[in-house]
Image 1: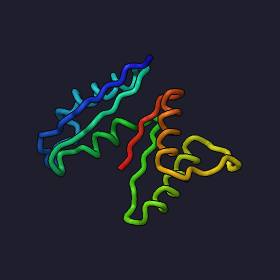
Image 2: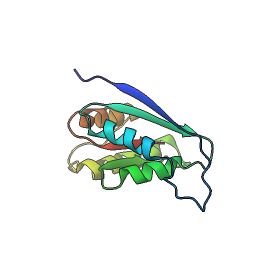
Image 3: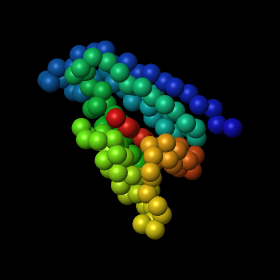
Image 4: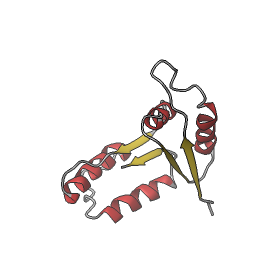
Length: 125
């Protein structure tokens, strides 16, 4: 049985535009890389004040990694589900003859199922 873990990484340093975005981020990148290389599920929560480099840290981390990223739009829930299902079809090469996901639960359970088969980064927001 795979052990699950939830890790929180708090970014508190304010980075100015003149500084490199990764000064002082080696520890966070190292933590993420170690977890990524393990053969088990990890949920990582990256949080901190605005403009401290959370998104940049994640973008840097996922370079050259398989990454499924979905950002909901300000539209209806059903339309967002359609967009997410389209993203899943493309990411996992789901054949067109397979029926579409009709609920968020189905779609997210599929992501969970696939996470047991292969390693990938998943961001949903």
